[in-house]
Image (tube, rainbow, N blue to C red; front, side, top):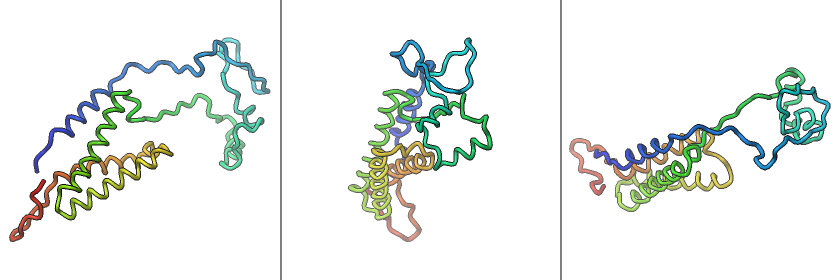
Length: 191
């Protein structure tokens, strides 16, 4: 088996673009200079603390802005009235966007190169196993690409892992040869 340097170079370039400057503080509404006033019966905050720019959970629930009946949140809030989620920070890692435009371009290039490696394996290889793997890669990447147009399916770790394995299988279908057993002729020497 011969190692090809292109995947390793692409991986190194992708890791190099992941270095970023510090993340700036969030600005919810850059055009607004003052926080909007929200009339509510919730507890008042001290004058030294900055007002919240959103409606409190009680006011939003009372006005019907948060339909919570179907999720069981009302039962949870009855059992734990102090746990309303304030101060919670939710972080999501987007592998392409977090590295900026160069990282997204690198990720797109890796996906396209892996897809075309599988298409090349379909056209060049004569081994039925390699062609079958390549066909599965082409169909799997196409299905995930179609699904990604309507959903954020690669944020689910299992889907992202399967997608990564599919990309690797595209390269394996193109370059990996089968081992020969004693007394058998080689299956495919075209790669």
